[in-house]
Length: 369
Image (cartoon, rainbow, N blue to C red; front, side):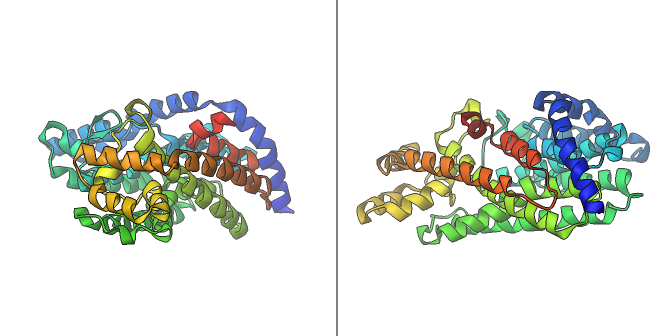
C-alpha cells in the first residue's frame, strides 16, 4: 500500500517537474548557490593559518568546476524532484539536491583534470586544460585530489545529520573506484601511451571501458544519490533504474566518440584527440571489424600517432568504411530501443524522468526525434 501511494505521488509529480524549471532556469539556480558552495569549501575562518592554500583552492574551483554543461548536476535535481514525495519537495531539500549536484560536478572536475594530464590534452571547455594554465603543471595532480576531497567536505557539512549520509558517502566512494578502474582499462587499452595494440580493441573491452569510466558516474550515480536522498529503499526500483541507466550511458559514450571525430570545436568544447591518443573508441572498434588486411595496415601505421596527416588518413579510412552511416543506424536503433525500455518501466519508476534524462544528456539526438 505504501508503494502504491508513493507511486501515485511520483506519477503526479512528473507533470509538475516538467513545469518547474527548464534546463536554462535550473542552471541559473545552480549557479546562484555556487558562491555558497565555494564559501563552504574555502571558509577562511577555518584556515587562517594557510591563506595561500585557500586562495589557490578558490582558483582551482572557479577554473575547473562551474564551466561545464552541468548535466550531471541537472540529473540529480531532476531525479530528486521526480522521486521525492510531495511533502519532501521543500525549498531546503531542493537546495540540498543542488548541492548534491555540485558534488558530482566536483568529482567530474577531479576526473577531467587527471584525464587531461594522462592524455596530454590541450583544450577543455573551450579553454586550456588546467595543467597547462599559468604554468600549473603537475601541481594539477594535487589539485585533482583536493577537488575530490571537496565532495566529502560538502557531504559532511550538509548531510551528516541525515539518515542517507552513510549511503551517500558509499555511493560516491564506490562510483569513484569504478570510474578509476575504467580509466585504468582505457589507459591499458591505449598501451599506456605507447604504440597502440589493436588486438586489444575488441567490443567487449570497449563496453567495459564505457561502463566503468563513464556510465556509473555520469548516469547511475546522479540518479541513485537522488533516490537515496528521497528515501527510496525498494531494491527493484534501483535494479530497473540501473539497467536503463547503463544502456543510456553506453549510448552517450558512443555519441561522444563519434563527436570526438566528427564534431566541431564549437559543438564539443574540446579538440578531438581519440585517434592521436590511440583510444579504444567505438569508431576504431567497428572499423577493425570491417577492414581488409590492407586497410588494417593503414590503422596499424597511422592510429595513435601525433602526425596530423596520419590522423586524417584514419578519418579517411572511416569514411571509406561508411562509419558515419553505421553510426546513424546505431543511433536510431538504440534511441528507439531505449524509448521502448523506458515505456516498459514498472514498480513505480517515473517514465517522464528517464525521458527527461535522455533529452538532457543527449540533446542532439533527442532533437531529431
